[in-house]
Amino acid sequence: MRTQGKKHAARQRRAAWLLAAAAGLTGLLAGANAHAQAAGESGEPGTAAAAGGGQGSALRFSGFATLGLAHNDNATAGVTTSFSQLRPVQKGWSANMDTALGLQLEWQPAQGTTLQVQGVARAGEDMKPRLRIAALRQQLGQGLSLNLGRLRSPLFFDSSIAEIGYANLTVRPAPAIYALTNSVASLDGADLHWRLNLGDASLLAQVFGGRYDYTHRFNNFAPAISADASLRGLLGFSLSANLQDLTLRVSHTRIDRYVLRSAQVDQLNNGLDQVNGALQQLAQNPLLPAPMLAALQAKSRGLAALRNPFDNRPDYTSIGLDGNWQHWRVLAELTWMNPHNDLVGRGRGYSLTLARSFGDFTPYLAVAQMKRSSAVLDTSALAATGLSPQLDGGLQQLQQGFNTAQQFANISSRSLSLGLRWDWRENLALKTQLDLMRTPSPGTPGPLAVPALPFNHKLQLFSVTLDLVF
Image 1 (cartoon, rainbow, N blue to C red):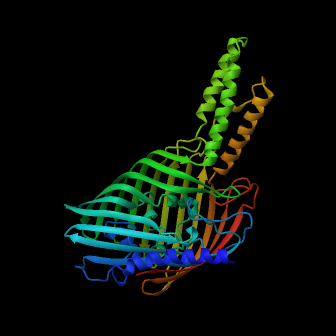
Image 2: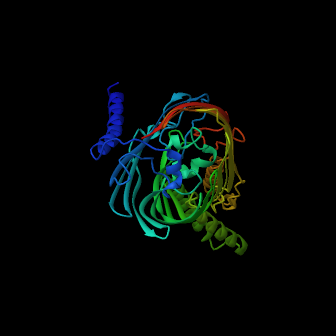
């Protein structure tokens, strides 16, 4: 009990750290419309709304928060919003899915120059503060602006506002297609915006590049393990058209190196090296026929190629829209992911949300799906040699390990969501949502936290959230 009390106190201190740091800089200011400003009317996605303090205020403080509870009915699978979430929502009630606090400070030291800092603490990560934005924005004139530093992720249509619950019509962007990109919450680098205003419409072009590091959680182990994820050579662009009742956006991102390192990956590499060493010793036998020697040498090269099997070079593509017609609203997005890695496999997904407002109440229906192509990793180098029982035993163990890895790498899933949003106060929204989630089979974990296969691949998640911006 004493240990649990210490952990609880530590979580409270982390949350208080964010609040105290912001309170020491400036007082609370009244909010504004979150989605319009957070999603890009100012040309800077991922910022919390902040209208208080006046137009000429040099220092502005704003923030967002979500108080949420979610109930999972599945005892064999947990739920997360990203692959960096420390604590999945297991069977029963939990605040780990959506509860979050975000604080942002903006300082304008000179005309056209703005410094932004944003921190976020999530219940799923024990309320440990994470730096999401630490950037300098410089207006260059002629509709051009440059951002340098840590920026919000621009990968998908709603990536920049995924954590701002109030800015999302639904409780959260569908994990089926957003679990991967939510893990890449920020970008350390630069982006260049160009905005062209055409009456009530505007066009926005964005070019971005940089790098990012985060901790990737493999929740499909018991206990779960962590890996150091490193993204290098990230380059991309987006084009947006903002009309009076319609927003369209297309984006494409290419990452030159996506590296995953952990003790388990090191262990796998060592196993490959040991088996390869034994294979090379066997190939030194002068009595081996030439064809068999050539086959063993080819097998050795194949084993070397299997090192670091999770490293990849992914491309992300997104086409999204947000449209309004009278009391109706529709949101849709198509996504493609090509990791250039046969173990992970390609993925294509979609999400579609239809909503109808009745005053302050907005019921909605949403569907989402991610489908991964079959992995075709070449593991022929792990076939038995027939020359050494010990060597063949090691090859068999490695083959079983790679087969399991290919199963757990399959992120295919689909969901059907029914929800109700109530905008009961200015800058406050209460939402309820029922998600019916499933993966293709009991042997396919999808984005779920599944420690053992097979499992119950159908899951119901009921969520209640209170979202606010200030």
